[in-house]
Structures are given as C-alpha cells and as structure tokens.
Image (cartoon, rainbow, N blue to C red; front, side):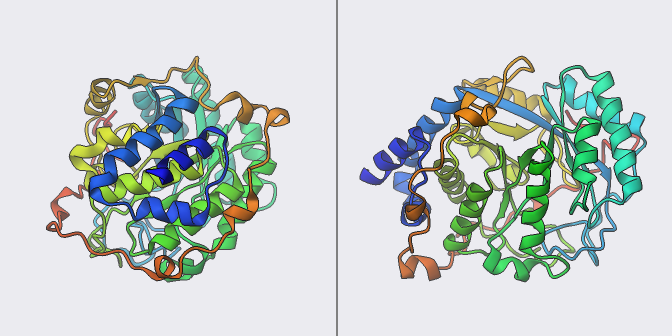
Length: 389
C-alpha cells in the first residue's frame, strides 16, 4: 500500500503524518491488518529494536475520588465493587514495588486516586519514592497523583521522581462528555508542569469510550504536540457500576489499528500497551508487541491482569526481550535535546481531514460482549494477598 510505504518513510524520519494519513490507518480493513502491523512494526524496531520495557503499577490510594471521570471505577458515585483504602505506608508501597522489580519491571508507577495531591501528600509520596529507590537499585519511579499545584512538580523531582504521568484520555472537543470536574486544559497544564520541572512526561489516551476516529486522531496529535517521552494506550475496561459499563466498542483488530496509528504519529516515543489489553486484545496480544515497546506487568489499579509469568512468556514466545536496567529506553536524540530536530511539516499535521471520516462513528463490534473478562483486583496493594508480578 502506498499509504503504508509513506508512513514508514515518515516514521523513520520522525516526520509527522497528516491527519488524513492517520485517519486512513484506522479505516483499513481486516484484510489489510497484517500489512499495517508489519509497517508500524518496522518503525518500532528502528527506534527500539526488539526490546520491551516492563512497568509495574502500585496503587497508593484506591477509590473515593471526588472527580467524575466516567470511565473510572474510582470516580465520584462509582458503584464498582473495587478495593478502597487510604494511603499505603512507604514500606508497604516499597514491598509492593519490589515484587514488580523482581518480575523484571524497570519502572514503578505510583498512582493515587484524587483530584490532585496536597502538600502533605507530596511529602508522603516523596518519602515513598526515597524508600523504593533505596531498596531497588536502578529502578525508575513515575508518579501519577492527578493535577499539580505550583511547586509540587519541582518537589517530586527533587525527591527522585523520574517521570510524571497524566493522561489526556480523549480529544479536547469531547472531553466534557466524560468529565465535568476538570477540563482538557487542566491536564495539558499538568503535563507541562512536569516537563518544566525536569521530569520525563508520560501522557496517553483511553480508547473505546464511544469516540470517533477523528477524536482518536485529535488526542494523539495533541499528545504529539506536547511531546511526552511515553504514551500509554489504554483500552476502556467497562466496569459495572460506572457510566460507561455498556461501552463495548472494541475488537482486537481495532485495537491493533489504534496502536499502529499511535506508533506512526509518535514513531520514536515509548508507546505503552496499558490497561484493558487482556480484555480487548485477548489472544492477539503478541501481535501488539510489534507496535508497542512497553507494557504493564501484572495487575492494574483496580482490575487484574494476566499472570506476570504469562506476560514474560508472551514476550519471549513472540521473539522479543525484556529491557534491562542497563539499557536506556529512548533513542539518543530524545535523551539529548541539543541533537533533537523539530517535528517535520507542522502544516501537514494540521491539515483538515476528509469530512466524512471526521464525522464517522465507530460501528459496534459484531462479537458478543465479554463482560466476564473484567476482573476486579483483589490482591496486592491494599490487601494481605501477594501481588501479581
């Protein structure tokens, strides 16, 4: 396909595709899917070889969030029967992190529910970061605490946080449909605060919330403009008891097309396969490794993932290798800003897409809904049971 040849060439040059080209990837047929995966896989291998970076989530504080994000099982008014607990003590958080590190995780992601941290919360998390780094040599720590106030990003960086995660989640135009307690610009500002403080920015999206192809392209182009080092791609886990419980809009094939589109738009960025992969990709997860270079190991915040040993076996069976602590994830030009070049052809990035594609809605998948695949986390942080790592 001429489209795929063009996208590979652009990806190898770190050049931004046009909106039309990104939309065209999402519009490819199932018959073309392996060609799409192969093309995006060439871009992935050019910048990251066959390495897979493992990340491990530690949910420091679960549930009872005052925000009303419709996709979240921890949201205000959620009836999802998830674990609910207040802040883990630093030693308990470090023990949970150690399980992931022992399983091969290179980065530990510390997450807490809530609109954002208080200054006391930042002190608490800073102590946790110090404990984890003291007990786990070489591990990266990413904090994900919500919206930041002035000075908090700098304090987290001083405490040893390597990165900060705050996802954009969906397009600016539709953000008000999924959340009313904060807006898209609040999220953008927090990512920029993290970058200004010297932390590596991690920001991604959630697919499967009923968005159109144009919405997906919009949020990925917004991410490209922010230029985070890591872009996690989540697929909605439709928890019973949340407003989006009936949004089963994804097939494994569509998930792969979304991942390929993200890779073409963000060719040299750590693209992470995040929440919902087991639910929506299912047996096609190994194909996704040709598109992403990073995954979460084991469980997520409030849902269970497949066994950590199965993650490792999948990586090995697919012919990939776990990235060690002695390897730097990002290509050299992203580690040294003096050598970095500006994204190519910014005018193309803003080009209007075909009107029909812009307004198209995503057809519902023909397969039966698999609600049985959503499993609430009952082990690990906040429980007396060993974690999955």
